Structures are given as C-alpha cells and as structure tokens.
Amino acid sequence: MEKESPPPTGHLSRPSAEASTFPTPAGLYIHVPFCRAKCPYCDFYSVTDRSLIPEYTAALLAELNMLRNRVPRADTVYFGGGTPSVLFPLQVAQILEGLHACFSLTPDVETTLEVNPGTVDKAALAAYREAGISRLNIGLQSIDDQTLAFLGRIHTAKKGIDTYRWAREVGFDNVGLDLIYGVPGQTRSRWEGEMAEVVQLAPDHLSCYTLTIEPGTPMAKKVENGLVHPLEEQTAGELFSATAQYLNRRGYRQYEISNFARIAEGDTTDRRSRHNRKYWTFAPYLGFGPAAHSFLDNTRWWNHRSLDDYLADLKAGKRPVAGTEMLTREQQMMEFIYLGLRQTDGIDTVDFASRFMADFADHFEPEVTRLLNEGLVERLSGRVRLTTRGMRFLEHVVDRLLS
Ligand code: SF4
Image (cartoon, rainbow, N blue to C red):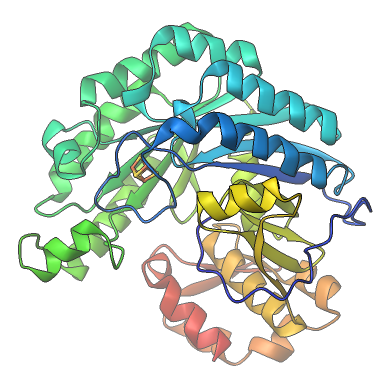
C-alpha cells in the first residue's frame, strides 16, 4: 500500500456521499501507522511513538464517516501497517464497529489483521477474534533466530511459532504466514529447510517475499558502507524459482508472484487472500489512515504519509488526502497488464477486450509472440501468463510489452 505521493490536485478533497457505480464489492484497508521498533529493511510508513494511538483511532473513525457509503458493498476489511497488533482488541472492535456503521459489509466479510508475534499473547489473539477478526496474517518472516536478528525483528522464531499455534488454539481457521528469503549468505538448502518446517505447520496461506533493500533505509546504508552484502542476483533468482517449485509440490498453489494458498484434497475452500486480490484484479478499494491508498472508478488517491498531517486535517474537518490521479485509458491498460502478469492466472484477454473495447492482440502482438518463443510467456485458454521461468523476469516482460 505504500507509494510516493504526486502533488495533490484537490480532485477528491470533497466528502462524497454518492455511491460508486462499481459492481464488484470493494475492499476496505486500515493503515495502522505504529510499530514497536523499526525494522532496518522496511520503508512502510510507521512511527514508534505509540502515545498517539487514541488520537489516531478517533481520527480514523472520523475519516470513515467522511466516506460513509462511498461504495455500495464491501466484502473485505484488512488491518495492515505498521503493526496493527499494537492496537488493543478494544480499539480494533471500535474501528470494526465504525466500519459496520459506515459501510454495507457482506455477511461473509473477510476481516484480516496483520500480527507481529512480538506484540501479542494468546489472550490478545482470542480477544481479536471476539472483536470480529476472522483471518490473521502473522509476520513470522523466518524460523531462524539469526535471520530474525539480522532483520531486526522484535521476536524469536519460537515466539513466531507459538503465535501461530495460539491462533489455531483460539479458533482461527484462516491463518497466513509471511516469510522473507534471500538474506545475505542464505543457500537454497537452508531456505528449503525453513520452508519444510513452515509447511509442517500447515498455514492456510503463505506470502514469501525476497528481501529488498529499500533506498534510504538503515539497511541500505549498511550496504553502501560495505557492512551488508546482498545476495547475487543470480542466487536470488534461483531462490525465487526454488520457492515456487518447493511449495507447489507440497500443496501450496502459487496464485501470485509471492503468494501461495493451501489446497487440500477433497476440500474446495479458497484460501487465497480475498483482500489482496482486490489490488491485483482492478477491484475498488478504500484505504483509511496515514499513507493509505484508495482506488475507485479509475481514480486513485492517497493520504498524507505523516501522522501529524493526517491528524491535523481531520481535526480541521478535512479529508486527509495528499494527492489524486485519474488514470488515463492507457494507464489503465498498463496496470491491467502488469497486475495480470503478477498472477498465475495471467492476463484475461476477454476481460481486456470488454474493459477497453480493444483487441489485446492488436495492441501487444508481435511482442507476445516473441516472448512466447523465448519461453517467458504462454497462452492458455484466452489468457497470456508468465511461464515459471518468466516469473523471474516480470519487470523485463512488462517493459517489453509496454514499450
Ligand atoms: S514491524 Fe513491519 S511495518 Fe513495522 S518496521 Fe517492521 S516490517 Fe516495517
């Protein structure tokens, strides 16, 4: 959800009570901009001073009210951050109450809370469930204490695994785990060893992210000073391919470049993240809280990436919007291509034709044929998708299609 903000145009600075005409149920995202400590690799917006949580919660409720019924229906709520699990269950309950008061949530709404294992105990997880959270996404990141220390995480591997077990014990039947791989010195066998232990836990969902050193972070400084040596691109690419191969063979179906959902024999439950799929399928979503982004009717807008500015605007009765952009038809096509390629289902050329009243082939042949001949993409019943090898070269394929 993090993105640098272009200059504001004021287009969306008015509160609107009109409902969107978009037929797909929307997703609602709550950005919780607080962390116990900053991890040196992370550039998500958050602050470590948690004294402003009560003020933030009140401001957030006001912001929800300003967009009351802006979408006709929503079927996902996602608390991301930052570290949403620094909120007390009572505060989460208050926010959920606000969401129910301001939006029409479907009866089967998926309500996810991201959890940092260093911030919770079993009683807190039980209380989140009681508050109305139906799905947890736990930032396990690694089950190797050395890796966790390198990443500056505030928890041990044991605490991460305990948190997962407590989640099950208190009744969560939909639990995802986040993992980071590609840390300096990591080998394929070490990473597969970690995945083996994680798979044993049988989480419903796995997100596996390559460690990326974001510019301006303390870790980027260490790299500049020669104190940290990132993995060679070739090795990182091999680990990427090994991840999909390993997990696909052990009951986890890759459905997006970094995301895997568990499939069990004789069980048709869809364990993909319903909320995150909104971002990849061009569905509408509203984001609340500092730095949160929204997308509705081909318009994107984003809130101030500063808690102070966010609070000040809401105190003054204004929407905390920092910028907005109306996507041109060409930009929409580009995003459609990029997001389609991120998913293993690929680009739906029939959907493309009906959205843009244009033939996919007219726009993207003969480049698709060239990519096909190079084994980077394949065609599959009206879709164009990356091959397993092509997944390693997403940016390259996108550049070629869009140039
Ligand atoms: S806990 Fe999460 S959001 Fe906070 S600094 Fe660490 S990685 Fe970033």
